[in-house]
Length: 113
Length: 117
Image 1 (cartoon, rainbow over the protein chains, first blue to last red):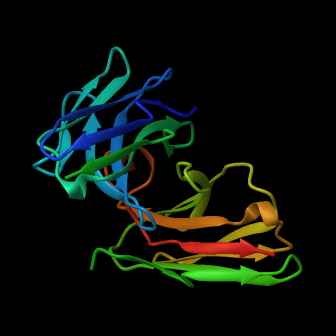
Image 2 (image 1 turned 45 degrees about the horizontal axis):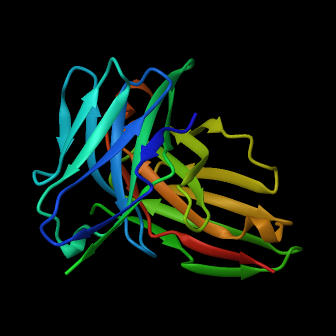
């Protein structure tokens, strides 16, 4: 089941901050965040795991509330290069040991000078 | 080398054609994925290979046929496609599948932009 992202779109001026939210109705093991620029491949930003562990880029911060099954991505002091579509991906483990990374609908972020 | 390479970058095919998309990675990753992405939509999971075995088929029509010849290569064979199959096809890989794989990042290729005419 696809995670729900909000907002759908954000417009910022350089230097402004934004928060992108992701929630799921299913129990999660981890949440992934990716950014995709137009015409390019999705690029990994961060993984948040149950128990509080995080892996990702130093300049990106995010949170994961396991009980609420929600994650938020914090973009501070935005730069022009932050523009793109941000996807959260939720991972669930299925019987047989297989996992699926399913993406939310995306949040389109535009940063202007 | 942290790249996933996909070929071709663009493909136009007729509805009666047979073509193949190729994906290659040399990172020693044991899980590989095919995603389909329509414009302004998220990547949609199609297939997952874990240790060269098909783990997940997301009810994809049989006109799409995946193949994993070895741990570095992943193919997607196309036959008798429909115009609605036109999309960006993304290949991705991650270090592991299964339980371990859930805490590792996925590396995506640049995709093959497929147009079915």
